[in-house]
Image (tube, rainbow, N blue to C red; front, side, top):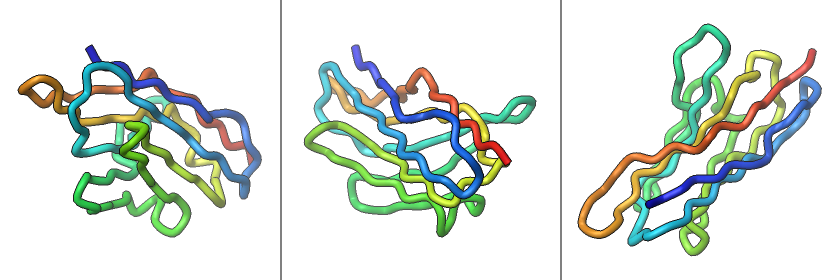
Length: 119
């Protein structure tokens, strides 16, 4: 069983910064893809950024130049540094990982953390 625990959300004024963290625990052999998604009220969940174990990283256009994803493989953790936040960044942010356990790879999600950006 693998669990993802997120932290770091909150309320911030426009132009401010937040750093989200997500750590996985359980019977983990390796983690290939780590990513962040978000879902605003009334909208579909969308990709924010993701990174692979080989170093490939991609960002949604909405976050390019403002958001930075990073990972610590030793801690099974992924981070999202968000700068120059805008009200339209308000959403619940979810981390997502493709985790290799004993012989299989499964898709896991965190519980979500609320990010609210006030104007």
